[in-house]
Length: 264
Image 1: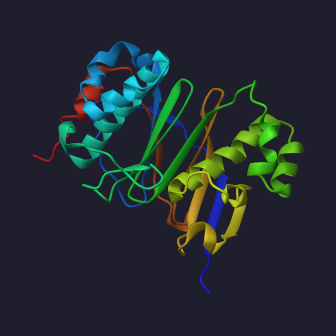
Image 2: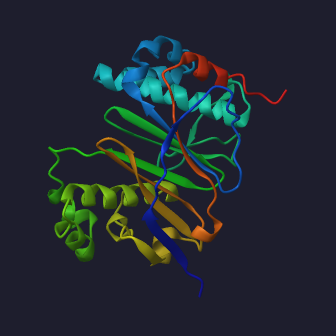
């Protein structure tokens, strides 16, 4: 009987600043991640909001706190700019659809997979031709993560965290791996979350968790100071391609350049 395998490891992926003139294309094995430091874009909020449609602007207004409204406007508009760049489409023609777990996708371009994550001052977006999930987390000093142990970790995983020299780092490493993987699966957090593997190494997956025979990879990496991240995607290490983390600079010129990447 065929089984699915999950390979978990660390990545030394390093951020490089996005520069003018970049071509937006994806090869089969590419995993391209964009980092957005949200406070840098507050001054551009009015410019960026023009790329949002009426339902998106209404959604922004539903956020109770202004800081949350601003963050949504920034990362949603940059997501649409990037989607336009990769699909060679006008931003006005970018409409997000949602699956049953509220994961966004582009029905008009089913080959393009993407996932977004945000935590405190950062947002990140991953793009791939494979199913992909991304999670970033701020390493909070105030979060009592031990309260979650019974619901999200098995006995072995709890021991790994409890025996770690840096328990907070160990917790967020394992947590982001689970989050990224379930986001790649499109599952969300449910009763199976506790049984998602998150320890480094190779695992055989229960068919009930993945419901197919696809193989997967999950990589942890340092995202920014006081932030950890994990990215999950289809395939095994033998089929790995290019993994890049781009830091989007606070430049409207570069952002607007994305809207001009058409196949004319």
